[in-house]
Length: 175
Image (cartoon, rainbow, N blue to C red; front, top):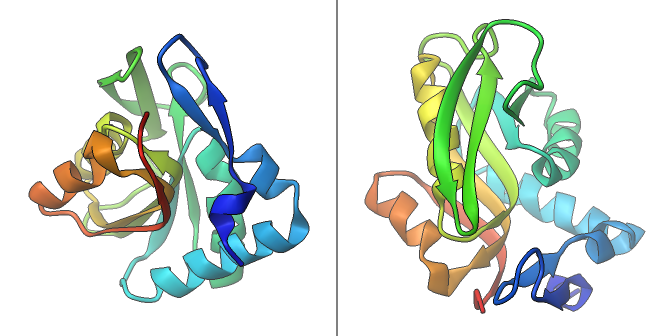
């Protein structure tokens, strides 16, 4: 099954000049969604990790299913002011603005290893912020696993240059 066939491309969303890669067409197809989860589970076996983290919100769709299958705790990395207890926060830049993500301070213990799952990597700003949150919590990033890599935006390359392990299922150009 070619998972690329299930990704819808939407031009000029969320702003002019961006070609948005939409995963809703992938997750609404039960066979494509199952294949995606199976591939993530298989790729995750390359890494040793204690917990799985995902970046809000589309990463939750994939990571929660993988967490359930692998029987690993699931950590939510959320947008600012969405978590009720004490948090660590990291500000970062997106391709089209700035944002903040947070994690509960008690989610990751010292020296725990965390596999980070997200739907897509573009420039890598969000992924780098996720790594900072995990490290700020005392944990270590085991690896990053993305459904889609927008390869010409160099996000995966930047993570690898910073010493992180990275896997993805499919690739598209960023524009």
